[in-house]
Amino acid sequence: MRIVLLGPPGSGKGTQAALLVEQLGITHISTGALLRDAAERGTELGLQAKTISDKGELVPDSVISDMLEERLHYMMMLPMVISSMVTRATWPRQNHWISCWNGYINL
Image (cartoon, rainbow, N blue to C red; front, side):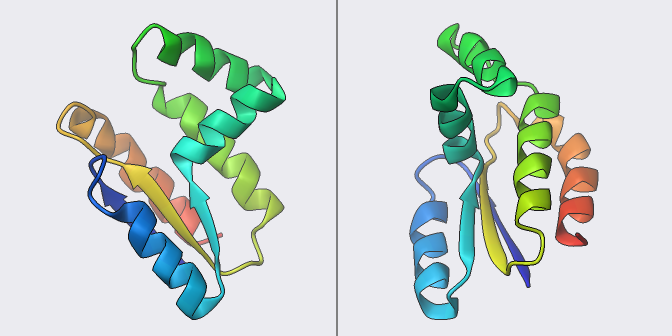
């Protein structure tokens, strides 16, 4: 089972994910948490994302996609819920994400 929650900051993705984790016993992967974790661990992608976000810029889809793919391959047999931010500012980037999500859901 793969569930993907998309929405702007503060829309309740994390709240809904927590409920799904509790009710279904599945794993939650947050793209924001992935970015913070990778930066704290000092990974190449994490440091790259931190440098970009520290400048107030959006982390490129390719970086987030690579982090998510890395984590999903590690956990690919587990049922999970994925939450990720979508805003008007990021909407032009969403065409790329549609094909990424399709690939992730089918892992």
